[in-house]
Image 1: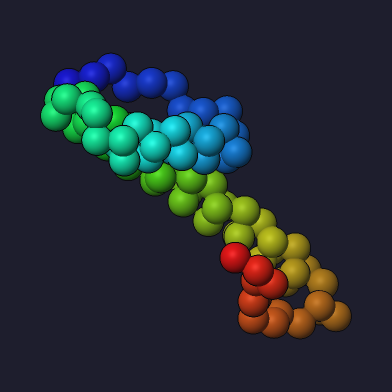
Image 2 (image 1 turned 120 degrees about the vertical axis):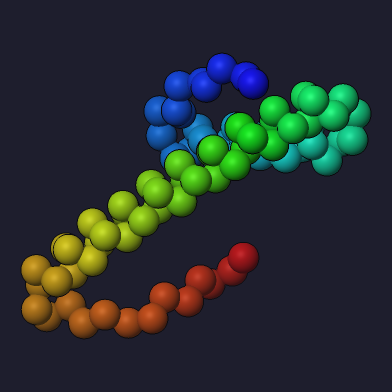
Length: 80
């Protein structure tokens, strides 16, 4: 089992690392054991990223809750 790497410093770094892992896995050139290790690291990064996004969402919710004049509205991204 691979050693656990230190978590990335921020969300953007974790996302960049995750994108690199996906590219290596999609290349199909990794031996099975290396691919499994990469996949494991990718899952960890995805979970860390999800946690950071949830924390950011909670912070925004707290800020909006403290301003009674700021009603909540559904978020719809302009472009994906």
